[in-house]
Image 1: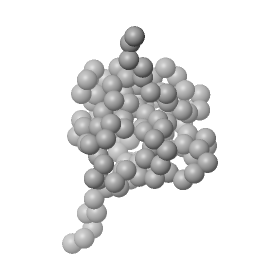
Image 2: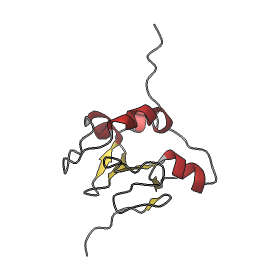
Image 3: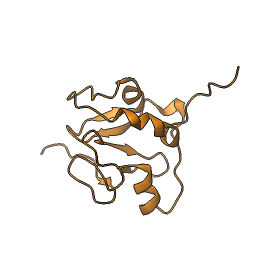
Image 4: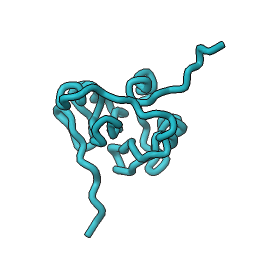
Length: 115
C-alpha cells in the first residue's frame, strides 16, 4: 500500500495546495498548524475554516515536520523549510520567497530587537 499524504484544508484548493488567497505558480506549500496539527494552505484558510486562533510553532519544535511541498508531497521540518532558500530540498520546485513576510504568523521567530 503506498504511503498516504496528509490532507490539506483550504478554500478552492488545487492539487498543489494553492488556495483562493495565494494561487501564484510558486504558492505550493501547506503548513501544519501548531494549534490543531492540521495542514492548511495558508493562515487565511485556517482563519476561515477553523474555530480557534492560529498558534505559532515555538523554535524548540522547529525539528517537527510541518511543511508540505504541494509539488512532490514531501514533508519538511520547519527548520529545513526556513533554510531551503525557497526551493524544495526534495524535488527542487520553487516556493514563493515572499512567504517569508508571513513567517511570524506561523513560527515564533527569535527576537532581533534586543540590542
